[in-house]
Length: 299
Image (cartoon, rainbow, N blue to C red; front, side, top):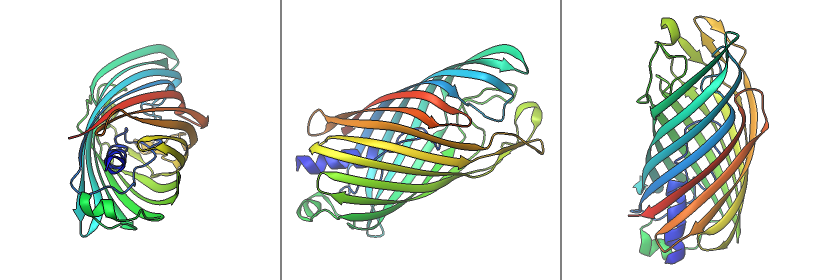
């Protein structure tokens, strides 16, 4: 029972990271019993070449960002398949400096980021089961899942500013995943793409649009005992070129990040998770260091 609860804890809170193609989040499609509710409190530190918006005329940019997040997740039955509903909201404090139109400039921001909602479902593998039935069923060796993430533009935004915490547009990410279990080892591969609506109130009243941003992620995880595991993660994302006022910007992305995640159980219903990552292959906006920690509790 302890193993099942810790597994459920992992499965339904792991996807509470910021919504972008730079995320490295193993375990997002782990199957969990129906009816589990989880609260997640997280913190992330990022420093380096972080593009608030790669279409802006900022050169030699460097940013330090502190982000706290609160997320609520619930495991549900969706037409007979196990599924997860998640809502997450970040609070961000950031300092950015660089050359704007050739002149030194700096900006500080503090406030709410955009709201993230995610629905994930297991399409092949274990069906939806409540805890007693879930405990009796053997684990599936192969699971195939899919999800849709929606980012709602509720974050702090001012069209008179060139740097904002909110994006003033909607974003959608359909994604598919394959998970392979082999005893203490788990291999995961995700593939998806971010799709964006236009920001019709960009700087100076311009319209900003963005091409789709495709992403892939690979993770290999080793479990030592229930709730205690470590994983190595790598991703790659490409595309996302922007257009401002009818002019395409030179901001096509082709980036990769590598990192590792450690999960440690504190009790039957609580755990903490630590993650570190760094840009591996970068063209724009991904050459930064990231360190995060989160606390999860089953309610």
